[in-house]
Amino acid sequence: MKHPIPLKWPLAFLALLPCLASALFGADGSRQPLAAGACLVYVGTYTNSRSQGIYAWRMDTAGGSLSSLGLAVQTPNPSFLEVAPNHRFLYAVNELDTFEGKPAGSVSAFSIDAATGKLTFLNRQTSGGASPCHLTLDAQGKNVLVANYTGGSTERLPVQSDGRLGAPTDFQQHIGKSVNPDRQLGPHAHCVTLDDSNHFLFVCDLGMDKVLSFRFDASQDTLIPNHPEGIQSNPSFTTTQPGTGPRHLVFHPNGRHAYIINELNSTIVHYAYDPDRGVLKELQTVPLLAQSFTNRSTAAEIAVHPSGKFLYGSNRGEDTIVVFGIAATTGDLTFLQRVPTQGKTPRNFAIDPSGKFLFVANQNSDNIVIFNIDPATGKLTPSGKVLDAPSPVCVKFVPAPLPAASR
Image 1 (tube, one colour):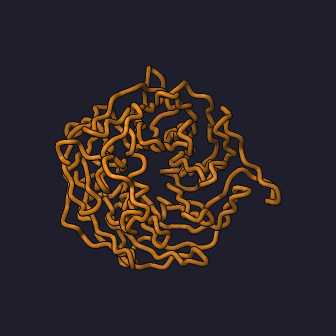
Image 2 (cartoon, helix red, strand yellow):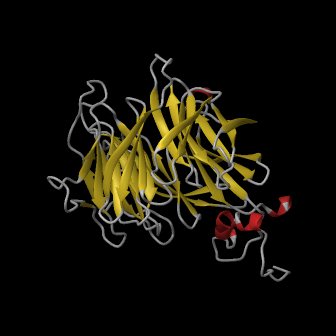
Image 3 (cartoon, one colour):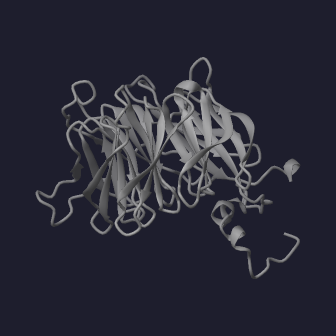
């Protein structure tokens, strides 16, 4: 940099530091020029006659302007994506029923070119079970954990220093069922979530009406079922109400509250969380659907705003995003707003790094609708920006510098 860094920064710039810090250096360690609030937007899809894989856009979070970067990489059914903590690698499930002749899907690793947004394929490993639908990385980026929907299982894959995936080190088969004869005749893992301490892993199993919990150590190869002391019968799971179908779990930024969105009965449940023992305690249940809505609808995605003040959930069928306020002292939810998504089947949505925009992936209308987030109320208003995206099912952001030609 040509000019010395001043000792005092404007508050507005300080707010952007989390998005910019990782873009200081390139993949080879060289210092890169920065553009305030520049981020890559990656969209995973279901591949078909319209879609070929993962697509990319570049966004300026200061003003919300977007430019298409086209197809980032061709890969089958990348229905959920995750980005490494160092922002150099991206991982995608390949939601398939067969891989290398066995009943399994796979997980693919890619390197990220911050200048062009292109993804370079590194390697691919089996997910251990069919139809992998969700994955996460630990805080150090040393392990990928994946949930397999069909058959209900969880697998652990080590990440090598070059971003490639090693062979699986652990596989956990879920066993059980619940009351819904159409959706719960067996286990269906739908989400893997690590708590903020990186010590406990939670797996939502829609088919069992349970949230399984494991002790996690990034330096160890196996997952150990968590049997916390002082809990009646000492179970390694939290049971949800019969027929709810737990889908996704998110933690509040303070680490003391968790929220689960239930797919089958369209509710969100608030839990108090004990981070020392990895224990969830149910506190509150709120409905997602309007009382006047009587058609079929299933819940999908859930997210807490970075401020910790608001929570969002999506309905597929009613095709809405529902906004809740989060009480500062108790973590309880209060309904604020219900907004049509301007598309069909909002399977996934994501909040950009600045906390100013919410991107809704409408799977069955081939579009991503962008909403402005009011920082004071959390409420959504359409920004007027709509991205054309074939069968979009996952949105992820990666802080990245603008290319030289744009500076």
